[in-house]
Amino acid sequence: MWGTPGRLEVDPSGILALVVPLLFGYMFPDIGHGLVLALFALIFSQRWPQVRFLLPCGVSAMAFGVLFREAFGFEDVIPALWLSPLDDPMTVLTVPLLFGVFLMLLGLAFAGIEARWRGELRAWLAVEAAVLLLYVSLLLAPFLPAALGLTGLALLHYFAGNLWLAPSGQRAMALVGAAGQLLLSVFELVMNTLSFLRVGAFALAHAALSHAIMTLADAVEQPIAWLLVVLAGNVFSVVLEGLVVFVQTTRLVLFEFFIRFLRAEGRLFRPVRQPPEIGKSSSGRSGLARIDP
Image (cartoon, rainbow, N blue to C red):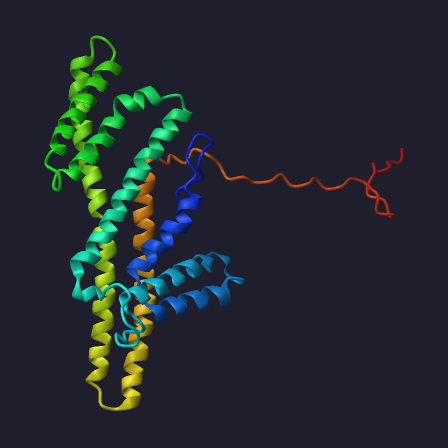
């Protein structure tokens, strides 16, 4: 959906095979719902190959369902191997935030690797490396106040690097532009990092929706009506949450991770088709067609 990496760009395909199922499964943690998605992919992947991505995502959802004790809304089927989301919401929110920090750092590191491949490593070390250092120092500052000294060094590094790269006679304007770009970069990094809170928020929303479905079902006295409420609620949950989680996973990959390093300057590999044979003889051997005068 974003594009094809060029020869001087990092190809993130292998990483996505792990990142996408993890994000999807964490936001949609349910053994039963994950099983439905995985079976759907197995049954219909021959007819619609595009749905094959649901298989690893469904397996991941099943794994997180085991960790979170979620199975079609029934909370007492198995014990939680980790925790129940509604019992410890702060932990559920914090874990994907840390995972988002890891992805952001990985994207910034990929940008440095690509700069090395393009022969622009010195320029990257002069400016972008300072932004990476500033990001790390700001992350550490709430837990390690001494990291604020690293923040000062990163700022000094950043402006000194911009002065070094600026043409003579334009250094004053370069500092002004560098200050504006730094504010934009820091704001984007902060907002992109906080975007990963939605991963935990959707995990909590799934647990809350499952609890609401079971509460509605328990209010019904007739067994058949109870079964219909549970069935309709779970179908609604699989369809709606599956679509929303897919959109959110795609958004996080495209606009929080890819934007750091992927320019998509490559093109799709399309093999050249074999040209049609000319004047094929009746014996099956190809040759030139005979033209009568």
